Length: 139
Image 1: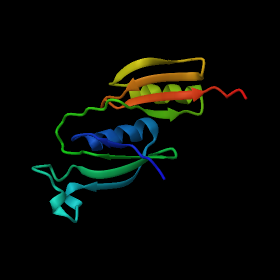
Image 2 (image 1 turned 120 degrees about the vertical axis):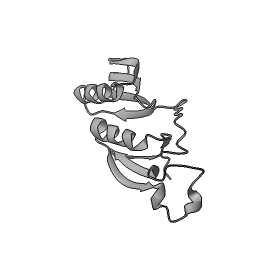
Image 3 (image 1 turned 60 degrees about the horizontal axis):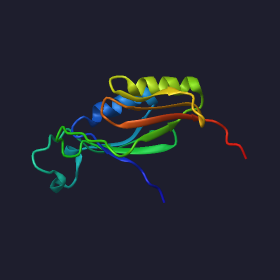
Image 4 (image 1 turned 90 degrees about the horizontal axis):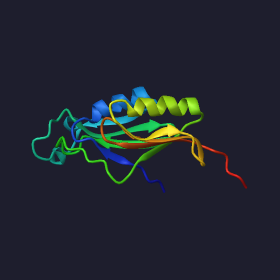
């Protein structure tokens, strides 16, 4: 069983995916626009058919699905954050800086009792991110 996040960008999905490709190395594995749907009953209202009906992209070993949803322009990413475990403090800084650009830093990247680097931000689309380099666990 897998649980995967599915993000609705309400009209800016393609821009978001391009941003994630640049900042965290996302690789698109699937993308279907509304105009490519074999079932035109899937079109709700007057959605721009060039918008993304469904996409999937990989970040490391994880898959994130995304869509333009109903194209309302009202993104409301609350109550969750996506977490990236970086291999080093330098990588964490690069990722955190890229994701926070144009967004909001919620907790600056820094050392904590549980991580050599940990920080929280919301990217320019409002998606919450936590970037961490965990300290080794004592057994």
